[in-house]
Each structure stands twice: as structure tokens, then as C-alpha cells.
Image 1: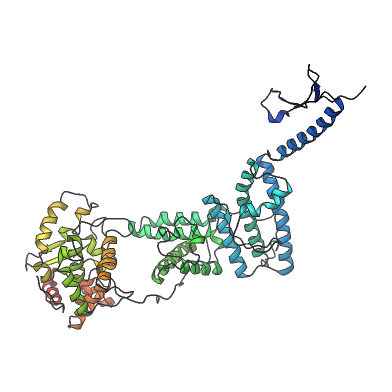
Image 2: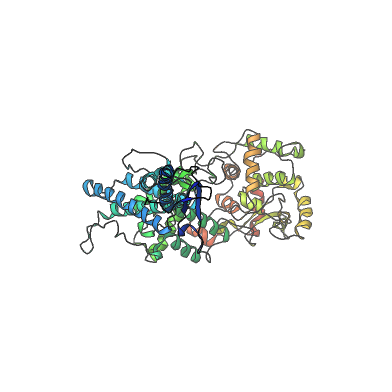
Length: 557
């Protein structure tokens, strides 16, 4: 009797069919499905040959299908197997050649942060600098990196397993890089109570209580009750740079001198307004600091970051989280742009001529007009001028003299130092220009609105935010429109230079230094002055006579 396989059947028309049942694991429970294909022949011998071929292909497809429908844990096992092999090779080289150099560690840490960013941003591109035998490729993506696994296990690109593998690869690669760095760092551990070298499966688990991210939260929680809201926002912003750069799994105990210097170098490469510029917006920090020819942070801003980092680590040291503050005394020389220079009296005259044009000139509305005049004739800071309310322009009942009252009595104001709370006489020229009439009108409007409404300010077309308070628009107009429009703006001459001009010119005409300091809100030079010298309304007449000596050409057109 001739063998007749179960998948070969004959129809009532004597035509042979290939019938093949699908495996149970591909079907709903209790469901039986068979695939039937006509072989279009009455010849049994030909039908047997054709069915053998179809059987072979059916099993090939099903075997491949079995691979591409792996469980999640099976994909994990593939990745663990792969990286254990690669890690064993890398550790063998480290054992032979010694630990990585500082530059190599920094490169690997940069790669680690890129992997972390790729996970957070759901990107496939990962920058890394390890040579797996095919040379350095920079940058390349996850798909390139996982090719050995895909080829070894015949995983098809369009399968769900391929997608899962691509997603999980980034996590496995990140852990691999961390293991590699940890192993290299531990090679110089010569303590006798612990093993000097640890294998790939013996990497110490991170103690969550030392995560930098958590330490920062604890530090900020304490700080919140001791500083003003705008200062708190600045500190919080500076510290977020650390977690963005180092990653969410970085522990505070990993911070050493090399890391601190690396952070400083990254700050030096960081572009201004990195999260607003088209070239860098939306990119991970590690990519934002690549050289794109953009203007970088000023040295003064970098020092602000470093001082904030030092405050964090000083607190961490006091609370026994670390034994060393590696940011203590760390700073960069503030030489990038140099200190601001005062405007000459001729340049001030050019400004006053332009301001006098009112709506026909650059200062074409009340906010711009009075903002520039008050800045010129008070020497006040940008934020102080911008935060003025109509009620801050007061008249002394004894002398009848008018003055600006600079305070921090409301939440929407901020004074830089204690000495910043002061009085500044209103220059007679401002009264000639109609300041008092303008104040009267503004007062009626301000009385009807809340403190954070722009109409509550003397300069009513400004806007408020936590970071720059009321000053941003005033500074932007003064620097980018007014001074640039008059060709007076340089790196060393900006709106802040009007403050220098006020001080320099009063000093030049012989006004006593302590009076000048009192009007501009500078701390006195000695402890004796700080304790025994207090200037109040009793000195308003002296201050008014002093301010009249400003050598500016003033005439109302």
C-alpha cells in the first residue's frame, strides 16, 4: 500500500489538495483552521512531490513565525546574552590594559547620557564611541547597533518583535555602559575589605536615597521657606541643568573633581536661550552643547550656575550626603565681555533728543518714553524702574520735593540688596516733561486693578513673569531698539550703562560718594558706614541738589 500523507487529500472530482492545519498557539482557544490549496492534478505522484515542497515551506514559515512572536522575557534574554558577551570582551581588555583614561570615561559618560536622552525622547539615534570590531561610527542608531542580534535570530524588520527589541535595546545598552564605567572605576579600589574587581553580574545596585535628583528635591524643599519666589525659581532652574546633564539615575556620590570640571566645561559650551533657539530647541542637552556657532552663556551666568551648584553641595556636605564640595570656589573669569562702560554726556544728549520726539521717534509710547527718561535720571536698575507703581512717586510734605520710593513691599517687586530700599529725588527735568500729570492719570487706572496687572505699573505696557519680573520688555526695547537705533549699543554699552553714567557723572561734579551710593542702592564701603549712616527723607534736599548737577543738556521742546 502506497503511503498517503494526512495533508494530501483527494476531492470528489479526483483533484488532489494540500491541506495543512495551523498550530493551536496561533488560533483562539478551541478553534481549528486548515489551509487547503488545490494542486490541480489527478496524478498522485506529482501531487506527492508538490505537497512535499509545500510542507517544507509551511514549516519554514511557522518556525520563523515562532521566532517573531517571542515573549517579552525571551527578548530580554536575547539582550542579556548579547551584552554579557560584549561586556566580557570589554572587561577582558580592561583587565589587560588597565582602567579607562579620564577622556575615555568622559566619552563613555556622554554616551550614557545620550542613551538616557534617547529613552526619554523616544529617539532611535544613540551616540557612542565604543569599537565593537567594525570601527568607530559616530553617530549611529539603535537599528545599526542591534544588527548582530537580528541576524543571529532571524528577526524580521517589520515584525512586532523587532519593534520591541529596538525599544528595549536602549535600556540594555544604557545598563551595559553603566556596568562598563563602574567596572573601570572599581579597578582602582584597593580597599582590603572588599573585592577589587567585580564581574558583570556583581555591579552594586544604586541606593535610591543618594540619587542626585532626590537630593536636589530635598535641598529645594528646605530652601523654599528662606528665599523669595524669584530667587527660588532661579536656583531651581540652575539645578535642573545638573539632572538634565547627568541623567536621572546619577548618584550624588559619583560626583568627583573630574565630573565637576566636566560640568564646568559643558556650561562653557552651552548656548544662550538653548530651549528657544530653532537650532537647539527640543534637543537633549548633550546635543545642544555641540558647537553650532551660537552665542554661549556669559561667564557671569556660568558663575551663577557654579555658585548654585556649590550651595547645593555645601548643604549636602552639611547633611552628610557627601564629604567634599567640589564646586567650592570654582568659577570662570568674567572677561568675556568685560564690565559695562558709561555713556558720554554727548551720547546722553543724543538719547534725550530722540526721546523728546515722543511718538515721532523711537520712544513712541508712554512706557518707552518714561522708561528711558527715568532710567537716565535715576540710575535705577532695569527691574526697579519697570516695577514702579504710580504710588511710588511721592511728595515730601515738609519740603514739597518729589521723589521715587524704591521698595519691595509687594510680591510683584524684587530688590537686589537691602541697600536697594531707598529714595531717589525726581529730577526737575522729569517734572518739566510732565511726569506728575502722567502719574496722576496712571494712579486712577492702577487703583482699579490687581498688582500683577500691567496697568498697575507706571510703565503700563510691560508684562510680568517669575524669572525677570517686570523688566524684560523694558530691557529689550532699550537695548535692541532704542540704543541700536541710535548706533549706541555695544557689548560694553547697554541699558545698564545708564546706571554707570549716573554714578560717574555725579562723581565727576564732586557729589559725595556716600550720597551717590545711597541714591543708587550700593552697600556702603565700611562697617562703620553701614551701622551709623542712615539716609532718609531728611536728606532729600541734599540729594535733590546733588542730582541737579548731572551734566546733561536738558530742555523741553
